[in-house]
Length: 549
Ligand SMILES: *[C@@H]1O[C@H](CO)[C@@H](O)[C@H](O)[C@H]1NC(C)=O
Ligand SMILES: *[C@@H]1O[C@H](CO)[C@@H](O)[C@H](O)[C@H]1NC(C)=O
Ligand SMILES: *[C@@H]1O[C@H](CO)[C@@H](O)[C@H](O)[C@H]1NC(C)=O
Ligand SMILES: *[C@@H]1O[C@H](CO)[C@@H](O)[C@H](O)[C@H]1NC(C)=O
Ligand SMILES: *[C@@H]1O[C@H](CO)[C@@H](O)[C@H](O)[C@H]1NC(C)=O
Image (cartoon, protein in one colour):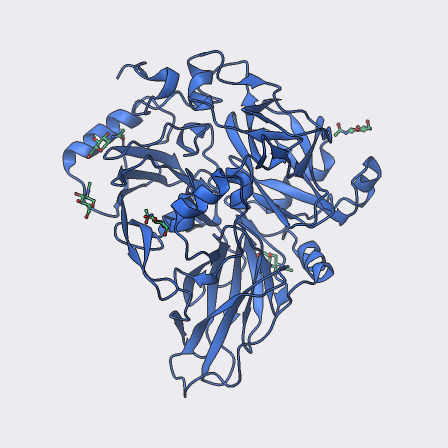
């Protein structure tokens, strides 16, 4: 087994031997490079808004360390949970092909108990682009433990723009001064979250960040919204942004003076330092909120003569049409390469007939006197055993297939461990319907999908006439505007148990999510990896064996 070893930090030889044991006989390909990480997750003091808070740190960092990898790399992350409570990390946008075992949400993985560790063994198969990881349990995301993931193209694959002079990650998000346990307590007791206290850029809310650039050169900025409740807008004073990539797809290179970034979305833009040598504001502000929160960072020319001229530039606030138009302008560059050297548009997603339509309506029912959130009237409650694990061991009574309908019922809300059955190789159309007056953002684990349409009002089969079946962008998160719908096409080419969730974190926490079980009757390792040998087992699966070495 010939392995190129790209060691990010040193590990004792015994761990590597153990790793080879873990990997042997699994379908992770040995020829692709390995990157090893060891992460220690702890509580620690942070001061994002100038006051001390308890944050969740990874290797003492807030935000957590960035993962930098290349298409097809094997990424091995040994996570030590030094919190006094269970913990899991999930990888937003990493497709985990054939391996929902590594997805790190409670429907697929047993939590890492306090004082224990779990090694995620992932391959960033056939992916490029900008993503992030986040803690998936409880309300940990409100305390940190998130970080950027960048998957670079392999050296021989053409990238549709010249190599930038620098590559920066901007993790932007709303923030609360209350700690994650207080926020969770509010939700558990049936109350809504208050309005956030501020907006952070890379963990700082008080303009602490400066990004140094050389005049005349071009830089890539990867911008992800890792916040909990609000869409954001970003702009660079005196500069424009050329959009080049969205969650793994190279886009038409349109130029924008400001860009909306909805919850859990990631965008890459190129910014050329083509102005007078000064400092310039980078502004991030909340969208569609009556009170506007904002924060700034500095774009600092290395030969800067001084402070920014004028104040931070204003941006759009409540304008929805503006945002709709911008969303529709974001399209796939059909002639650019993706993770492979062939053009992205060589797969004609629009010429394949869909085999099933799933309509998902979000709602906010009160159930048993408490505020909950639902999809097709079902508000998800976790089972005592991860669904994937229960499925593998055929433990009955944990969930039932068909526990969420394919279309809105508009009936009263109810609690259920909702799992939707789907067949491997089906080609589905999913319509996210929003009858509420709030902004939505939806994410599907394990997949990238084409956003074929979005519009105001109610979706009907006639809405298909206006679908973009030519150059819609493929990504893993889609926003749905108030009283509007968004439609996607998604080929079910990845067997597993996949989380479909609202990225509004209070809604996700209070039940606006479910699992899509993509099933292949072949039951073959070609379609799905076997349970990892190191899988943690809990609930009704506690004490079972994974598989012999
Ligand atoms: C993690 O950090 C804590 C606090 O610094 C330390 O006590 C513990 O030994 C560390 N664990 C590992 C596995 O490095
Ligand atoms: C925990 O870490 C050790 C190495 O320190 C490793 O041998 C072991 O496999 C890890 N446990 C899991 C469940 O991944
Ligand atoms: C699309 O990608 C091609 C190939 O790299 C590039 O030459 C072209 O400029 C891009 N087109 C647009 C409109 O961005
Ligand atoms: C969170 O905040 C509450 C209220 O201020 C406090 O009682 C609690 O100890 C804090 N929890 C942690 C883990 O910091
Ligand atoms: C899609 O469906 C239409 C109408 O039923 C049919 O005419 C067409 O041949 C189908 N296309 C493919 C690629 O199967």
